[in-house]
Amino acid sequence: MDKQSLSGFESKSFPRNRDLMLDAGWNGRRRYMIHGFVELDVTEARRTIREHKARTGETLSFTAFLLACLGQAVALDRDVHAYRAPRRQVVLFDDVDVMLTVETEIDGRKLPIMHVMRAVDKRTVQDMHDEIRAVQKQPSAAPGTRMARFAPLVPAFIRRLMYRAMDWSPRLHRQYAGTVGYTSVGMFGNRGGWGLGMPIHTLAVTAGGISEQPRLVHGRVENREFLHVTLSFNHHLVDGAPAARFAQRFADLVEQSYGLENLAAQPS
Image 1 (cartoon, one colour):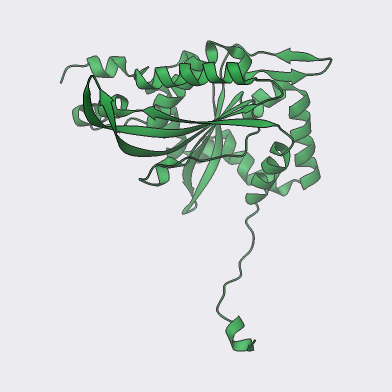
Image 2 (cartoon, rainbow, N blue to C red; image 1 turned 60 degrees about the vertical axis):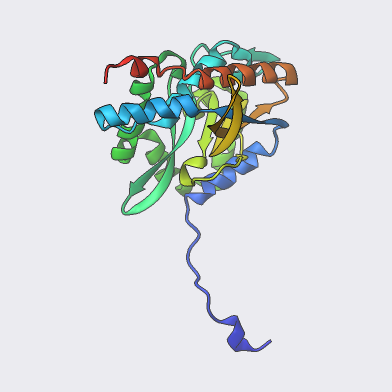
């Protein structure tokens, strides 16, 4: 092969913050995960959010709505976010704390940071919307930003020891990573499709794209909007039947537009 044909490439440094993703993959590979792929009808929820924007000019966070539904679905069966503890104990937390990825702009670059939203089962959609927007507006104040900046400077073996400590201490896991994982990949495109994350939680939810599909509604064929969601469970702690019941509860809450009732009731 001629040397000239080997030219024409760019070399740049591997970002240190990517090391955190490598650590998460290293930790997640030891879990025996089962996955479910579901389609959720979000037609009414998205219509309510669009109507709210038309009235107020505010684009309400769709993620905040999904977190409200997720929190309620988990709260009805806390076993789906249980964690192993020493001496063959299982810890069930009262609050549902969700770790999610929030894309922010830092020093002119778009970066994802991990943010733990506390007690999502006890909060309103508006309250969580405000917190997400605050993190996006001032990412430097978020704990996840500090971790993203300084954790890569710590030697890899120490970071991975921290993951092992979190595996042995549910309270430590909750403090730094919450009790449930949530990732949204559909916000970056306008097509349907599922995503599969790197779960480090007993329950991880990956929201994919939204597609428009025809469905039979009250005897008539209508175009409906469907969100593609992957539900991942640690099979060491959650069996198939409880996982299926959780999926049904979560789907019902989403399709009933849980948490958006007050928005729909507001006058025009």
